[in-house]
Length: 48
Image 1: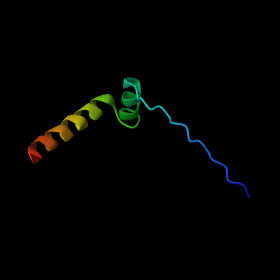
Image 2 (image 1 turned 180 degrees about the vertical axis):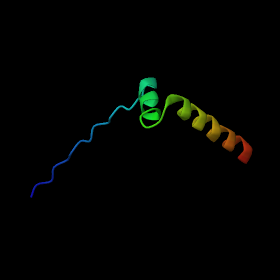
Image 3 (image 1 turned 180 degrees about the horizontal axis):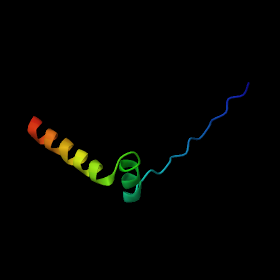
Image 4 (image 1 turned 90 degrees about the horizontal axis):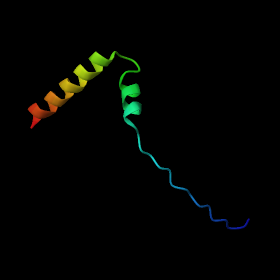
């Protein structure tokens, strides 16, 4: 068996705003997603 070097390419990952909106609203309504996000933010503030 010969030694072969395999070059691993780097993938560029830069999610867009549309990606996040689509992921947030995929299973739930937009209003519910925003309220959930705000609720999580408030929980984080109260933990400090």
